Image (cartoon, rainbow, N blue to C red):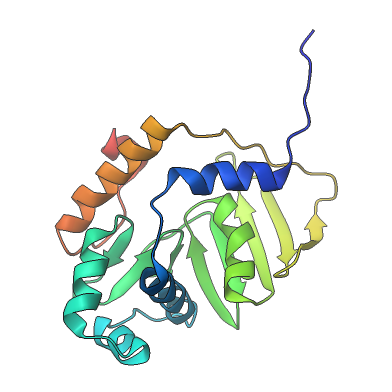
Length: 189
C-alpha cells in the first residue's frame, strides 16, 4: 500500500521557482512588461519594450538574448516567452483567453500562473495528449470554474538537473535568434 502525503501548492510553487534563475528588479520589470505586451495578442518589438521601460535598446537586447525561453518571429519581434505565445507562433493544446485575446500556453501549469501575473481573469481550454478537454476560469486569486467537475492535475516535480538541461536546450534554440515554430520534445531529445 502506498502512503499518500498532502502537498501544499505554495510549497510546490516555491520549489519550482527556486530552480529557475533569480531576476533582478530591472529583469522583473522587463519580464512582466513582456508578458503584458504578449497578452495583447501580437508579437512584441524589442524597441517597444525599451520605450516602455525607458531603457536603452542595447540593454533590452543583452538581457533578452541571455534568457532561455525567448522566441522571436522572422522580423525579430518576440512571439513567445516563458510559457506564453501568440497562437501563430506556437499552436498548443493549452489555450488561454485573457483580455479578449486568444493565446497559447506552453503547458497546463502556465495557464494557472499567468492570470495572477497579468492581474486578469482568464478562460482556459486545455487538452491532454488523448484529447480529453478541460475548461477553467482562473482569476488572479483562484480557479473559479472547473469543467468537468472533480478533475485533478498531476505534476511531477522537476529536479535541478532537468531544469538545467531544459534551459540549455532553450538557450541553444534562442541563439538562432529566430524560430518559425517550437520544436517538439522528441526533436529536443
